[in-house]
Image 1 (cartoon, rainbow, N blue to C red):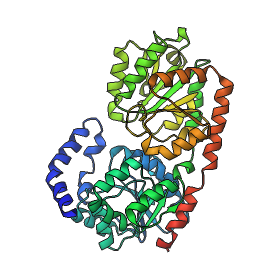
Image 2: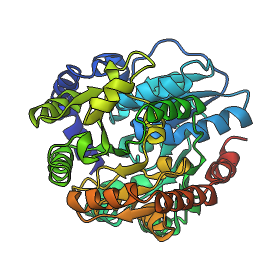
Image 3: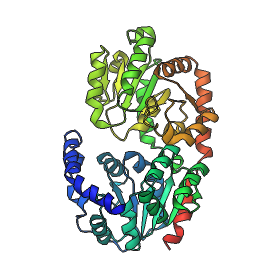
Image 4: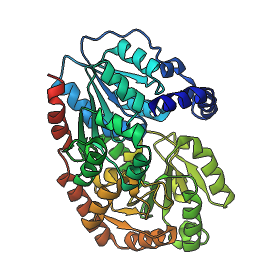
Length: 428
């Protein structure tokens, strides 16, 4: 089965490269470092290397506490941080670009020849995969090259488990070859054990150990102050199709979408940067006054924010600023069946959270947040806007919900330390 998988990869490589070049039209990072995707890298020398793979921006930000913990606990080691997406590499540069002990690279495509070239170039002591990254040839080649593999902050939904079971002849050998698994929850551990045959450690979610950047909090608070008494509703990490649903519900709730009807400032942050322009155009065609974050080049934005219906968050690496600016946050990817996104960051700064029905990628943490009173689930965009309107007109209720969110966040910290203990035998 793995031979067939490799053959398919080989046949599809021209298509993969064409898609890479096509995506590079809007995200230039995809047209950079292309040689790395085939296992060709610039010179590298380190006596000891710990390799952490974080495929995209979300996993990279999630890996931050672990990378910092590894740097602190193993001062003689260098960290190799690999990605598959341009946004992941950009997020890594923002977090660690000034640290000489962290080297970034793209992971090669999942073909044994390419992975072997990568491993023999960097010679890592340990491979640490974040969350759900199980690549059959990568893991098999690591086993051949005697590089132990750890899957940490691991999660596996029921939906993903069913998919894996349909490809069991390919996925099960890879899962069994993983040296150690650190799962987020007992439910994740049970599902992962059904694939790997080994009982994972339950360490919790590393995302709860995220460090909140004070500079972004200050910037968000300053922008919020410039909105005066006007409330700010954040719709974060929205996906294709969701903005249209939110816009329709917003204009139905506040027909002219302006401040004379006490409409909140809608702070809209699409998940993927290549969609910023399309979302801006859709909002403008609806007759709304749209202000783009990238246009705010000075510190005095009061007049612009007062007249805008929508502030489009067309920037990367500023989510904490957006959360700090908002009175209330809706987490996208959940109105349509994308599986949801991380709701931990708004909880980290005590913001009430709204979430849709489709959260299968984050079902456990979402359910726990709702049970703790930190989040509310909404059936659709109209329900979300109604709940938002009620909370925005109820400062006391909003503050209480925000306090519960902050408590929920603090109660779940400590996963990084537990994960480091799990990895310790492989780094001695």
